[in-house]
Image (cartoon, rainbow, N blue to C red; front, side):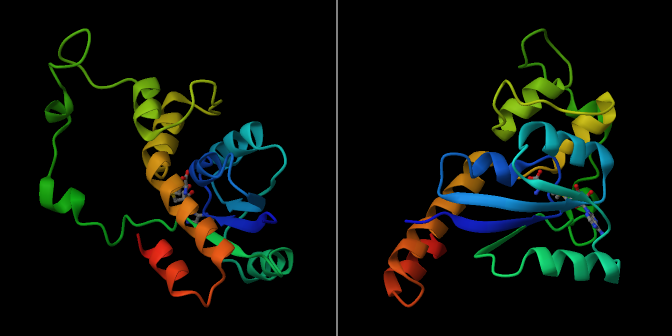
Length: 172
Ligand SMILES: C[S@@+](CC[C@H](N)C(=O)[O-])C[C@H]1O[C@@H](n2cnc3c(N)ncnc32)[C@H](O)[C@@H]1O
């Protein structure tokens, strides 16, 4: 099977790109308007052309549409804060994030622990201030879950889009 050519929109620090490692997917272009996340992406995925730009800007849209012509797969980490009810419903206070079960007693998890929970490899390089790094990790897709989705897409692509088995593969 040939590699699927992909574009990664609102790419953050590269969660989808890590999930795609080892699969027949080549992410050619990534776009995000947040400089530290773009730098992290570049450090870890040097083969991808990373554009630090605002996708709301029509000139950026035109440029990216040109670069994305003919891609097989559009990955997107569209921000969900505006529709997520998590904060409103839970009203979590900082103190409630402390957990006595952690090694070292009552404390918040470190960014390295958060990165491991999200599925980032230990040697993944993060660019930016501690606050920037924590945000990049928190905003990323959970990588094991993302890999399952990408595997299903690859299976479906192998079978062909008209196949009922391919559709079932994507829906899993
Ligand atoms: C949920 S995060 C994506 C995380 C990414 N998929 C990952 O796994 O690392 C959403 C990203 O969208 C970016 N973003 C939000 N609005 C944007 C815009 N108008 N143009 C480009 N990027 C934008 C944010 O900077 C943030 O990194």
